Image 1: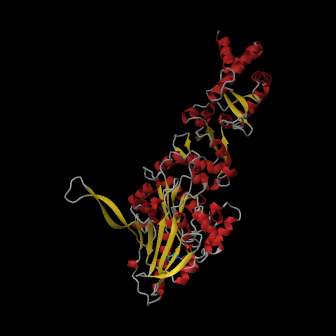
Image 2: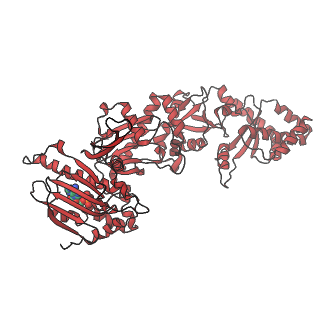
Image 3: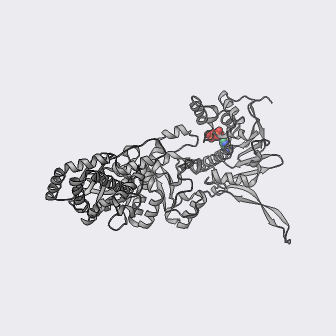
Length: 625
Ligand code: ADP
């Protein structure tokens, strides 16, 4: 019988499939099972609108069977089936969606990318089979037909026998090559795994005969293969089930099975949304960062399903970077299976879903913070830096959304508090939110600048994360309260009288202070302060770059180095002032040495390195001797 030729476009695509070097060949199974499920859907739908069609929903099924000897894999369904004409039209040419995808992508991409993450339906079978037979009987017809093709050279359609309506797709699987183990598609258990992976939530049972090794009856050590027909898929996914009927344990099992986490998630967010875009989603907030989370190998993303069929393992468009730790699945009937990655990025439905999910995650975290602080702190320890990154990334465009999720240590009780809690508890007259950065809470607590604040019962946020300074500067103001780093200049908690007194003292002793400044060299000013209580000196920064930033940037493995403009402040009430005045009058050289020592002390307190430790040590010895 003369072979018919495929349409030109189909031919091109088929050529690609046959010679495909695409590694994800297994998706053909997903495509065939989805087609089978669609065919059953069609018949089911028809039966609902046509009384003459008598089919029982419970009879619907898809079956997958293998014949290892003949190297055939058969996917059968009892769906609507196809007439001879339909076989011609549907399989002789690529379905519309497929062909437009083909053209669209081929404009600027290399051929092989067509397959990409998405299948192109029926033709993907040519990646694994060198012969395909489709035996089909349309519902209500007496006649069955067989479509057959060995690839590029065309296809034939002939009459044949088939008892029941529906379609059998028989693939003759390619011989193994050095690189590809095609025989994998002839092993019951590997097929079972593939069905579970891609088609677990197809709403009709997918049946397979599976082999199990069992002890032979009456024998103690002899085994035999027992074959049993089983339904491989779960059919109704957890995310499509009614929330009120799901037990917490079910969520946890699902989470650990799917995302391979040994620890239970901190939160589960189960949503079913209907409206402009309908979707079901099941999101999890892990309780700890995965081992590769802070490496570049970590890929964020949610599993994306369209009506129970997996279309992408990690859809990164669904989740912003600052929530990259969130795991989960999204299922929407509004997304098409044959959609390409490029199109997906611009897909409006997807954007709508992503936005709504983001809102849900924020709300969940806020609730957790309010209702279970212990859990929230655990979460924050694992992923807080992600949220901080979100606040300051992109010049703070997302700060409004995220700033309420931040927590810092409070100086008063050393507990973690949010910005809102800080503001709630502070005196009405206080116009700033005070913070200070350092290595650890204990070290910060000993900083000279902190003392007067404590004395005046003012709360300070202790920031121990290297990015806190940047984050809080990005926040800028919160509820009309300015963020103020108390280690920066111009913080004066004293009253007008005290201020005036200090000003005068600085003016009166300007000459001495200038000599000190000259001796130190590295700083913009030396002055008296009343912000210190018992400590003699401290270092503050003036200008935008703080000492904390200098430390962070200079610790990075780049050549970039910055210098904060520093001011050495001397406690005006400390007894060292008398000594300095005395030296100013009697021994200017000693005054210079004292200045250098005091500056070195201030640097040490701030955790800054000493440029010349030998010189410092000699200076100290000179004064001691
Ligand atoms: P798509 O599924 O994207 O339309 P395919 O190439 O997979 O593209 O399939 C082409 C067409 O062939 C389908 O649209 C459908 O009409 C028909 N078809 C494929 N498989 C079956 C089947 N098992 N039963 C009935 N019709 C089928």
